[in-house]
Amino acid sequence: MSAQQISAPPDMAARKKITLTDLRRKKEQGQPITMLTAYDYPTAKAMDEAGLDVILVGDSLGMVVLGYPNTLQVTMEDMLHHCRAVARGAQAALLVGDMPFMSYQVSIQEAVRNAGRFLQEGGMEAVKLEGGRERAETIRAIVTAGIPVMGHLGLTPQSIHQLGGFRPQGRRAEEARRLLEDAFALQDAGCFSLVLESVPSQLATIITQQLEIPTIGIGAGVGCDGQVLVTHDLLGLFDRFTPRFVKQYAQLYPLMQAAFAQYIAEVQARAFPSREHSLEMSEEEWHSFLQHIQSLSAHRWAETAVE
Ligand code: KIV
Image 1 (cartoon, helix red, strand yellow):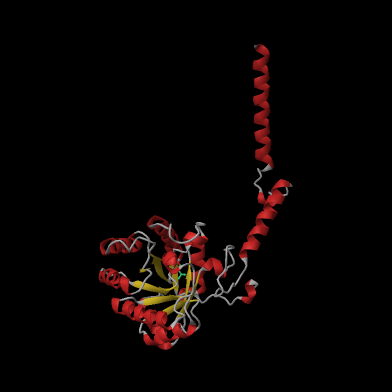
Image 2 (cartoon, protein in one colour):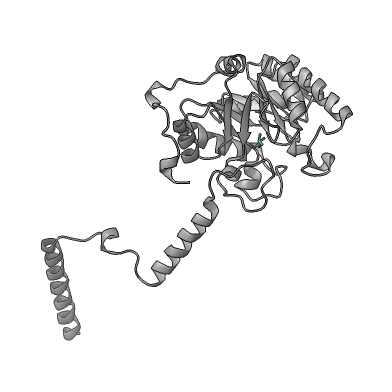
């Protein structure tokens, strides 16, 4: 896709900060909510300028940026480092930080403290955490501390070993019933929104219709109130695998490879840097410098001759 085919970003001067109220209003008015993941300053800036509603600093960064096989090794420090970069790049989008594995499971007190770090040290405005009814008490405590929480149901990558891999969830009637109940439990606990990952479209649509809070789908069909994708998947930057529900809006990985290969070839052939990419001294300064060198070497020669 060429740059001309992508519509121009909205007028940035007119963009206001997106709040939880804006998301709720979008749901009420049937306007889809847009969300993507970002992990660095330039990506966050480009998304913000394109008019995105919500930026999630997802723990998916463990896989797409840090090269881990899953999200389980991601730490609070990893998350906060990337959150700060994103916060410096985004002005208007609502910023959500993903709580990593073991940052909210051990105790409610630790969960509240870690959630607070996302706001105090990471520049985020809300946190996201995975799980259903078993997380309700933790979510209630975090929300009571004044920190907005986004829930995450369906395929919850931090439980891959329990789920038996990256598999769709809620395909059987009994599982679907549990997911609907969990969705209500998270809403009752105070979540302002809910990610539904890799669940059948019919189920995601019913959950969306039943809830007052907006749902954000990833592999959950068009019936959700909003959509999210992992940006490296959308840009074709992650070469390990691409889930079926991902649409690639660009293929940047081959473009990067081609650029690197061309750079290597040009450096090896001394074609880079050419004159236009080099600095030069003025004739006058260069001559003055040459004279200095010449007098220096004449002096050195005289010294050697005396010895
Ligand atoms: O970590 C992440 O990127 C996520 C999205 C897939 C919702 O949780």
